[in-house]
Amino acid sequence: MSLVRPLVRPPVVFERAELDLILGLYGRMVAAGLWRDYAIDLGPEAATFAAFRRAAERPDVRLVKSPRLRRRQGQYALLSESGFALKRGDDLAAVLAPVTRRLVKLVEA
Image (cartoon, rainbow, N blue to C red):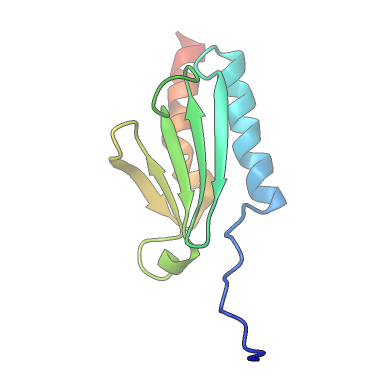
């Protein structure tokens, strides 16, 4: 009998400070009437936060945290509904800036 265990990587997760920033923005977007639902997917390669206008649609935006890309493009990526990368980087607040600007424009209008 072999005592060697297969290598299983723990899932990538969002830390508390990251979730505070993400869910704070999510709450403001819900209050503005832009988002209604969200989903979090934790996998061995990446963690994903997806925000939906309606539950039956594709996500309006997706925030992907991939620690393996930290030294290349930055570990965070903000993706549009079609999968186009809106912003990448290591600073979460800067990566979420396009969504924050959209909220500010809506509130000012």
